Amino acid sequence: MNFNIRGENIQITAALREYVEKKVSRLGKYFENSGDLDVSVTMRVLRGESTIEVTIPTTGVILRGEVTHGDMYAAIDLVVEKLERQVRKYKTKVNRKQRHEHGSKAIFSVDTSSVAVADEEDDVQFDIVRTKRFNLKPMDTEEAVMQMELLGHNFFVFENSDNNEVNVVYRRNDGRYGLIEPK
Image 1 (spheres, helix red, strand yellow):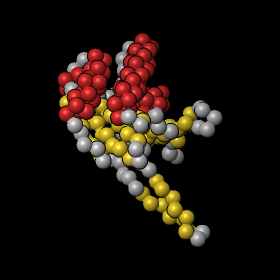
Image 2 (cartoon, rainbow, N blue to C red):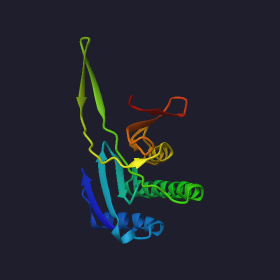
Image 3 (cartoon, one colour):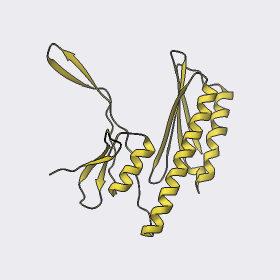
């Protein structure tokens, strides 16, 4: 695994770097070519809370985990556990799907962009605070829902392999899922 570790409001010591590499490397057992994986780790401290964010882009899926805790070492342990659960969940679903379809399709990831709303005397302004660009890869709605759940997001944008159009799946308030298609 190739690690890119950076810190915000925290000095990345050799001991901290070694601990992160040791713990996250445990995930390598789930991949055939773990030596080729690029792992991005961002650690930050804000108001006494330590946050660690780990992103592992693989072929077809991006694994991402973020944990905030009072202790950075505990946060590292928790984020690795979270990523292990994601990998096991993903592998189970892919294996089940392969048994039904005799093959698996590529899955991609997208981060949501945040939109902040400010209200000024009946005049609403929308400030775009983050922009994401990504390549859409064809997939069916079931795969899009699975990817959305893996990322822990409330919606997911994808190219529908059935009609080659951009669609959005989202989690409804009642816990079920919705699909948005263009006319």
